[in-house]
Amino acid sequence: MRENILKDIKKAVISLDFERIKSITENALKEGIPAYDILMLGFYEGLREVGKRYEAGEYFLSELVAAGEIMKRGNDILKPHLGGTLPDAVQGTMVIGTVSGDIHDIGKNIFTILAESSGFSIYDLGVDVAKEKFTEKIRKTQANILGMSALLTSTMVYMKEVIFLLKSEGLRDRVKVIVGGAPMSPSFAEKIEADAGVNDAIQGLRLCKKWVKPQIWLGL
Amino acid sequence: MSSLERVLTAVKGEEPDIVPICPGIFMHAARVSGIKLSEFCTNRHAFAQGNLVAYKRYGYDGIWAGIDAFRLPEVMGCKVKVPEDGIPFVVERVVKEVKDLDRVRVPDFDKDSRLKEELKGLEILSKELKDQVAIAAFTDCGFEIAAMLMGEYEFLKNLYVNPDFIMEAISIASAAALQHGKALVDAGVHVVIWGSAFTSPNVISPTIFEKFAYPSIMKEIKEMHRYGAIVSLHICGNATPIIEKEAEISPDMIEFDSPVNLSYAKKKVGDNVCIYGNVDNSRTLFLGSPRDVERECMECIRKAGEGGGFILGSGCDVPIDAPPENIESMINTARRYGIYSLELG
Image 1 (cartoon, rainbow over the protein chains, first blue to last red):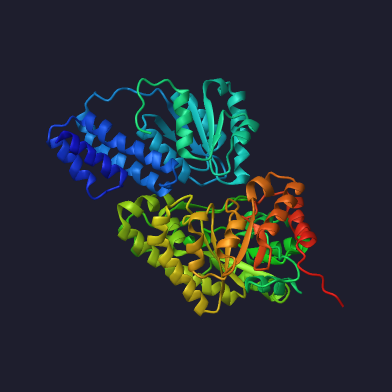
Image 2: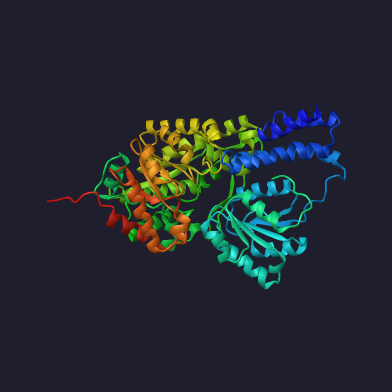
């Protein structure tokens, strides 16, 4: 019974079944399954499979967004029942934003939702973010990762200026810097002295996880 | 052959004298003519002037002319900011929830707007150059416009959460796209580009494409054909998984972005449709050298040039700050290595 219910939730996450997710999650609680188990063995198991399918080219951004949304729904239902049982798993705090002059935020939003689902604390500064805003937020939040996003080739060069400012304010050693967006590459990251450059949200998330020392990893 | 004849011959799937070259110049025209983007994107004369200067400097076969894609969502109710010398962007979406669909305005081309300025600018260009050089201008497909009206993230989310909402938004946006597309024809452009980044397999799955985008684009392009337009379908990113579906839609031309292998595209659909593309706009045109550009142009010609039905172009828009030498290199390479036959006598 219990196994079937959890399997059903996992399946609903994988098939992005928004019609059923609410009722089967509430039913699982009613059947006495601990919220923590529903989250870990139902939702996160499903999300992990979504990630695999994305990497295998079977799922696309549209499916990642939907999976993130379904995770949110699950969290909303389960949160009141979790109490303090969710481990403080991750010590990753991240400031993220699309750099000045650029307003493309789809990749950043997908990354944010997946990273949050995986336990990171994210401070999202939005789009068209000036360099001073990044450093100010890093100082305030004690973040250990900075994520910058750009789609336009004309704005990606601005990332270098942000890194320059980090250096001149003595913050560069305190944060790992990851740059993301369609035109990004490891060689571009190296050129502007970032720690990583990726053009894929899941790949980026994997790197960020390596940088922080977790007790347990959730999700993807 | 004039540049215009060259392009139109290729569009028909035939072999012109040389491979036509039409970089997606768009807002790069502002930079190379020294006009501020805020002027270029809001004033018909600046727009026309910028395009004329760029055309005279580079001498390509087709002017791919246009400002930012937000000019249509703007007249439909989105709020747009025009930076002094940057690309205009949306600051507020008109559709936040289902009931907002009633707030979406039907575009009014007589009312002052950046969209009207662009249309008038195209008229000026067309009057000046219509018989010499091909002029192409774009609108976006209904699917794309719907995404811009509600914000890309909300749009993607609702493909699964509330598909009926998306369907309704697309149908409203589709009508606007058609109105705009017809206005472009009336303004005198030769080719109407039917654009979309969001229908790309980099964003949505082919399944979603077939369910939401394919039927609406098919209907739109059919209607544009009835209106007498030559239509070029442009789907950004790696469209490889949907190449055949693109051809089924029956545009006159398909613009392929740089991730698509042109040999593959030529083999799959080259007999039925003119192929445009696909020099990498960021890696090569923006960050590369004129030599890199030359190499890649030759590669494109080699892969898709045979037998005609091919226009050499950029994968997507030429970056605003691309070095002009790189664009010159595109034109020079096409002229030097794109010769189909030597006309004797």
